[in-house]
Length: 127
Length: 372
Image (tube, rainbow over all chains, first blue to last red; front, side, top):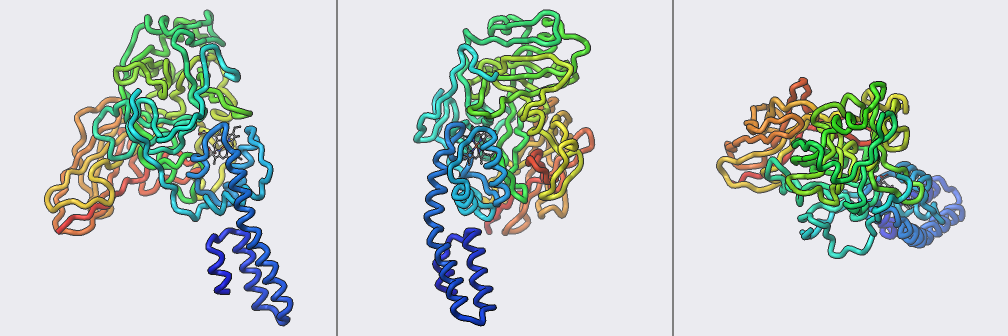
């Protein structure tokens, strides 16, 4: 378990769910092969994790046109909050190719468990 | 408008590095496109907020309106529809109105559970002197019908894709007030582009969303607009729903007057101060009401004492407050401020949580460390 915890520095929801699945199955398993199988499944989920995040990040880059990315990155929402945001944006004309990856990325990066985003200060400007 | 009017070009999302905005000093950037900029608390140091310091809120990208092509169209339930140029407006009687402008969502970042929308802290507020034409004069000129109940206002800004247009309805009872104007000037200068050049509404005491920028269309009607922003977005539940709660759509009312509120500007939160008297300052305001009292606590809300209110006591404007605090000994102190208004409202310990995250007006609180 320590190995898994060290690995999983980004505690994203699917990973957390997978981890507790492994934990429970290890506890409950009478049969080691079954537990091993679960462990492998969980590791596969981790392996997919960075790739999903990368896909989500790429998807976010397409969310421009109507506004910049900062209005997205300054939000701190849970999964339900992000789902609602995506529904609203799609209603307003955004096109999303890989919604699952985007949602995964948004929750992992701008979840309501994250500290508030630092706001940059602009430089003084003339008229 | 659902299409680009003549003389209107959308501001482009061109790269901006370093971040800077026309006519603006250093501000907190929530969004560079559209521009959503917050005034840092330490920059509030005068009763009038200078134009370069004033916060900026835009739902839709800022349009560029050419002065020569500008028209304010007045139609609907009127006997003589108008098509007023900037010159026409300048030739009408001009009045000056000082008024505080606050975004309905100012302080949203403090609500728990967290809410979507701009994560404003304390600085989506400012006070300015506006100059322009009374709405009553415009409505008289157009011959508005007595049966009319609303003015539905639109500006030159347009959304991309299927983004709803920003239209705001304001009831006649508010439009008929002497202080409700179409402003052409802000603090003695032509309205800056970022604040709605050439014309914006001034709706004193009401939420910023009713102060329509780049205003170019007024439809006089029996009914309010039913679009997204007025029909759904700028609404507040009739009763408190509790943290994370939901209200039925029919229980959401249009937001009008703002809450009673105060906040500290000096000393800075979590700053170190030397032993001796500490000059404590801030602002208090109450939407359409008057601030009658500001109390200060220096022990985290245990005991309260009256602050001295500034002599400038003008309807719809914030008031300054001042309090001299001599810490009895070194250490950490929690300072609180609580405003009361002429209608009897008092700033609460905790603003009621509400789905859109509006009207955050909890008692302000800062910490200071007094050195030994």
